[in-house]
Length: 233
View 1 (cartoon, one colour):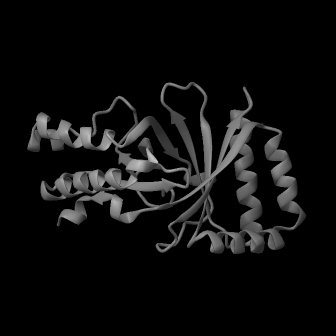
View 2 (tube, one colour):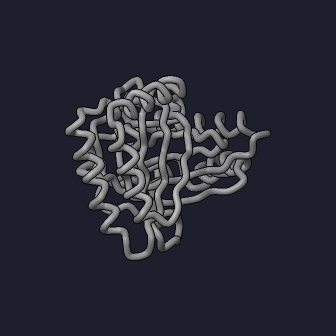
């Protein structure tokens, strides 16, 4: 599940909106308005919303087949409310944004370990960019991570995804760790370090040998800013 939300869709369209802090409340209001219009018109689609700590909002939409940033995901809504009304909704959202980063995400369930519980909305996310020519080796190494977690019976779930931002040629790997909140995340990480012991340091060092750069981001899911057809029923 992407950031542990979906269980069926394996590919997703990503719209990451960088929101102006001074207009954050306006942005939330505009997203809820779009959600309510979709619900009122029983639009057959869904999205989840993830809020990063840097005030970016990632809206994640599952798709059938191959995800592409060129796909128009709003055709049904446009047909029901008209192009003009749809553009008004979009304009209200964009008025609070500094910029938008589109992208696609592909789930890698075979490389992932366990699933987040339904009440675990908090995430710590590791982004990894592989060295040129090391993509396959890094993907294979992710299976070694999983093997050790299975052997140690680690209680710490993580899920792996491949992310492509905009027209960038280089892919990133996204590994998300789930918890109920920040304090719970720290407690789980400490428990996992004690369980894994020296193996954890070995795995991290080997992973870095395939990595060009990495960084962490944190945030949480905001269910009230998401939508699915069941909301409308």
